[in-house]
Length: 322
Ligand code: AVJ
Image (cartoon, rainbow, N blue to C red; front, side):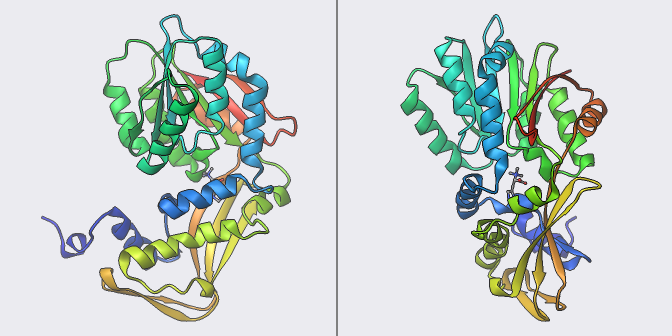
């Protein structure tokens, strides 16, 4: 039997917003950043001078593409499964290399946003009309479940770029890696990007850019709630506030209420009170080093086979096997 509380929610977004805003301290999940506007804002973030992650990983892939392509390729060809493909900007460097060297592979980009997948597929087919591409819309969890149930006839390479894993606290990162490992066979590979610990100021700037794009991205969560739950958050009455703790490598982003205020979420029949300077925690962006990555891998039953870094050692892509 469902309780009244459960039945009043239209979807998990509503339910999680209710949970997070009635909790103390308040929180919201960063997975809800990515609606159509959020997708666009994140693409803008990736082009910011302060957001070094994208350029570092692009350099890594560019400089090691021949080596990476060789590792990826199997005798009977392979499936290149990309989780959270986005606009595929960095992946296209690899695709170019794989096509130039005449490898037998199918590109399987997966993303939560159908919108993003449609654009990616069109672009990829324009560049390489004869490429094998099969897009799939879904959450990481559902897709991985499906992958592990599938009968596999050839090598699979799973790619997760951009330090996307960083949104997960270690406990959930281990679960995520464990789920991936369960879908892997001995010849399969996991290629995953991890943003590294570095000068705290460099990290802080990446999440507090001078143009205010990250601020807009963070506040887009409140805009979405306004639109989708008939709420009246005044975005001007919240400050974007990221902090980086060099001890545990965790960047946490907050929205801080600048005054005592009450916000109404009509569709949830809910009034939320904010004291002056009360916070909503909205995102974590975890930073790593080799010790932490090897520990996560070990917990998940994976081993690091190889790794690539940029010249400044800001970012590392690791190749894992079961
Ligand atoms: C997509 C999770 C890798 O945490 O760096 C960028 C998202 N948030 N700026 C990150 C994000 C604020 C990004 N990831």
